[in-house]
Length: 208
Image (spheres, rainbow, N blue to C red):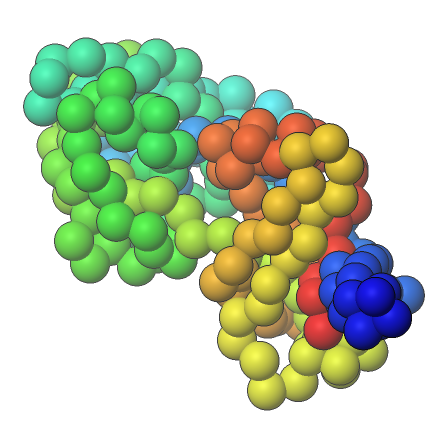
């Protein structure tokens, strides 16, 4: 019995939140990124995005502009918000439930990695484009290098993340995205967040 008690205590200790490893949650609903050429095709020549609200990461914003995304089943997901500023690529990030509805099987990728991305059609007020753009975003944590060092994560490119509560679980293969401009935040799509009953501003724990 003593051995069992010791083992249970060790497991609980490993799963318990550790000081300094707490990370705020950002729930990332389906959204798209556009390059200037794509933006012009959908909204008109030399179009500029209008800021709807600033996002947590410096310089990023949700635009007022939205598009429709159509898949091979000719079903449309309406009002997909564009995130700015413009990028060097056209991309839509979908949750798995969105993908099933549209009839696509997008790969899990980092933003900007469109290898194997599925073809979908973007429809805006001035035109449409069909592009290999649909992905499911990899779970990831934005973090500056100083925060990586403070949390003892130097040399890691993926971590495990623990979620407590009634729907507690552990997310595997959470990628670290490191840049000096980043504020620490984990990005999860709506399917992952709903499965763990997480909302923006909640806190999860990186497992050591």
